[in-house]
Length: 266
Length: 217
Image (cartoon, rainbow over all chains, first blue to last red):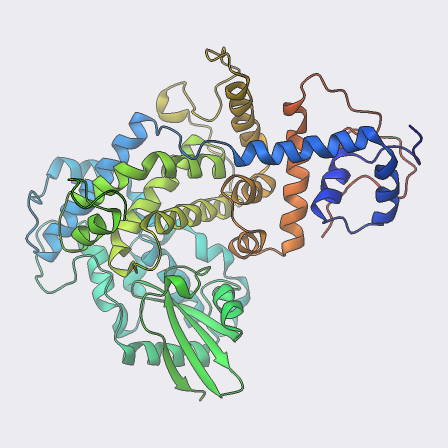
């Protein structure tokens, strides 16, 4: 085989196949076209892709992981039963489980209470005047614990209480929402939209960008709101702000948690 | 909606609804049904069983609490899957800022992702390749493994993976490509690269214009 110059590295070939090569691709193309070795490599690269795609969708979860998961869920359920006073069959507190869970997994619980986690980020973002740009670490810091109580704003009240009561034993409060996931009232959402607009708040950089791209609107900001993330978008043409409540920063409209609110741009 | 209506097993959506209504057993049943799938996602994305176990637990507690906000337009499995992926990404970001934890996995010597070249009980080549692949995936650096798992294994469109990771599409493509190149030797163990086809880590004496394959964006 007659080729032009040395073979490109397999990484270059992989990028060439992927179309992500930004260097001069014509030289690679010219080489590859006449080099059966490199063509073989490219075939193998494709086979890697196929093999990855064909990996089994499931893997048996190790028993101790499964057990830990069950225990955490039971503890959650027990806590929910207590704090909501809902009629939960078999929901009697199992002090052993709860104690185990407290001992064993406070960090995981804190992290899992993503409301609490993003609550901290939201709190910092809202209260810092110009610090919107470097919130990345706060957004993923696991130290939040029950810091959602720090969150100001009436919409957070029930939520914060729920989060803290999950671990408290005898504080029955029949009215608090069991799952802690009730969506805020539209009026609260609108006022939260306004806050985001005024404070340039964002939970994390580019939080809500997916939603903005999907709807073709510009991203104003985001904040933690009750069960999810409130993404604020601006319809410049209409002079309106839209508030979308979604589960995560990367969510699109398919995951919306409530009907979006619209208000005139202040 | 899985299964015929006459079957005793409730659908995923039904279980989730029961959970929201206060049935304390429903969520556990739902998780039990899908945990093997979700474990696979977490384990491959994170490449580490400790981390995967933590992420899975975080995700399921999160899902437990947010179940009331689930909207039936998407499948419950898709929703759970996404929550697990996000929990994994949180961990990757978080861990980028701190050193790895050297503690043994639950005190046992059975890290699921790395069956240290265990004797292959199953003679089928496919199985061998699969184990090799799982193992090799775990050895990739986070910034290559995560996009590769999302795109090639889990089938996320590149654009969606880019959104999830907050990176440009070109970067995702580049990282996936380079990760595939690293996995290449698995498919042809006897394969010896023609000169110059080795991964660019080795100093290939190269005077070409197409270079060493540094990261392109």
